[in-house]
Image (cartoon, rainbow, N blue to C red):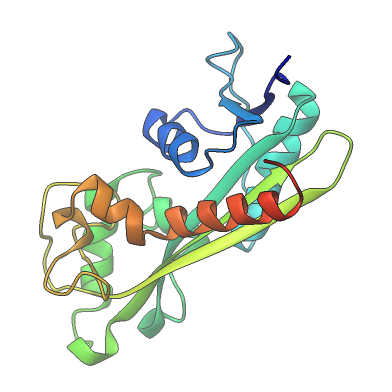
Amino acid sequence: MPTKPTRVIVATSNRGKLEEIRSTIDLPTLAFTTAAELGCESLDVEETGSTFLENARLKAVAYARHFNMPALADDSGLQVDALGGAPGVYSSRYAGTDGDDAANNRKLLQALEDVADEDRTARFRSVVVLAYPEGGETVAEGACEGSIGRSPRGIGGFGYDPLFLPFDAPGRSMAELTLEEKNAISHRGSALRGLRDALQEQDVQ
């Protein structure tokens, strides 16, 4: 009789992120779910870490302990070289209000107004942590290198996608890519593939 897949709770309420995880980490012994699918309230975990790893770990460990099952969390953001790595862990609240993409993009353009095109290099970075209720974790990270444009382009994606020009898709912003094209080169997609490979090496397959 087939072994029942181990349920893994994902620390997100974003349906798109959940589907990306399910399609990328397609191991038959793992079944990803969310608090909402379990009929529970999501946890409000304060992200007090100074790095993506610290924040992803905070969320994963909190979910693993609260729900007593393996938990997957990620933290990601944009790092701009000319700004010393900012906005970094503050990417979603760079302009002050959490999740105000338009305000964040305006502030970023203002900060880079006098920066030459060749010095506008940046990357999206993501760290994913799979934590276990009994302790222990598996970590993977990914990055997508590119530069910051001078005006928004495209209607897809979210966050800084209209300003980010990935090196792997010359001539287009991240917001001008199809979902499949974005997932193939994105920081989160890379991190998730890394996690999948690490789990396969641990014989979780």
